[in-house]
Image (tube, each protein chain N blue to C red):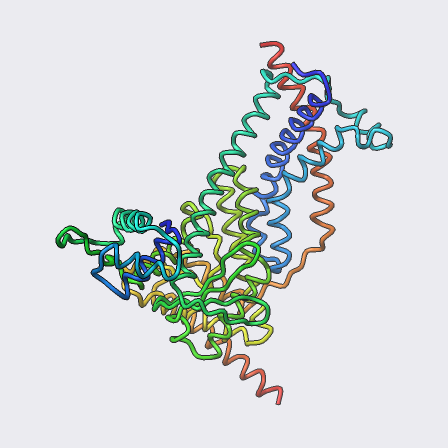
Amino acid sequence: MLINDVAIIMNLITIALLGFFVGALLLTIPWTFFGKLIGTYSIQSQKTLILTWVLGPWVLGLMTMLFFSALFEQTAIYKWVDNVVHWHHLYVFQFSSWHGVTVVLFALFSLGLIAIKGTQLYRQGNAINTLKHFSMAEDQSQGQQNVQIIDSDIPIAFTSGFFRPVCFVAKGMADNLSDKELDIVMGHELAHARNKDPLTKLLIAFLSAYYPKRLAQLLNTKYALLTEHIADQSTVLIHSAEDVAATLVKVVRLNNALPKNAPNTSLSFFGGNDISQRVQQLLTPTRKSMPVIVPIAFMTVMLCFTIVAVDATHHLVESVFTHS
Amino acid sequence: MFLGELEKQVLQYLWSSPGVDVKRVHGELSKQRDSSLNTVQSALERLFKKGLLSREKQGHAYLYRAEIARDDLIAKLIDSVASDFVSKGESSLVAAFSSVSTEMDEEQLDQLEQLIEIQRQQLKKGDSSAD
């Protein structure tokens, strides 16, 4: 049993975790009812909403932890919080209690996750370096970004790398497109590199790995599609939306023309609907905007609920363990 | 697929000079890097075990040649860049211009093209009526 400052830290971590679980559960309710409406908002609003959903439980967990900590002890907020909720014996922590089990399980899951994702990242990094080695190694500068030409007939263009993203374009893509079409493809890829999309996708994948698998997949897929919409939008500043949409369809046709047993047929990032959605979004963009105050107000309400629910859950579990 | 620096160089050399023994490979690579004959031999062995090289015995030595063509290896690498990180259903961490979707058939693509064409014509009409 710990009775010292470490115990306080461990208890605060337990509070943060409980806040995270309660927050995730609370956010699932509006997602179930309003999730389908997200698609009617503008791309930027959709991005804000998805980020609110992904980051929400983490922020709620951390905020709840801060409210229970000594940070606000001298403030009126602390008095209010203390009147409504309180955590008994904050300075006592026992690893064999449910608090301890929660923290240990979370730590083990996190370590496992870091190990798995780290290994996958390392392997992917090696594949990219090998690809650079065998491709033409041509450092063609477009603006400030790196563009690497791959000496391959496969019609593909993609961006990879977390801190210094590199755009790869295969000769099979460049040779089959007109100058304008290639400019659209490169504009799209450079937008991904500017927005550091591979990195943000990694963060979203990591943070959402703690959610139920189906929800995590949904959030990742929706976020990935948004990054495509945003990259498409940046090309529309220079080219017409119809030209961008037509290029997209042409590239899909080029991919379809590959023999079915070609080694790259598993290069499928999205389902067929996503290409339709991107074309639809280009031709008739959704413009309904959501004021930023809405998610902020929503999260504030959620925070109040979470703080109260953490206290209630704590008492409930404690009484179950004490009386059982 | 994981390839070390030396393995990449060996493979690169064997594409241009197929059917050579370890001494020839070592002789060529020693111009670029300081590797012992044993290290090169180990790299050849690893590539052979990975199925990237084939070999035939001639006298006391093995003659090595690349089993995979350069284009095929690049295709494999592109595939692993795109799919290594993700489990099924999760989105990839590379951002590609378009998905290579087997779901999207010609009919659906035709419909999308028609949609684009209709929009072009509507915009043209709008422009000409504005004139």
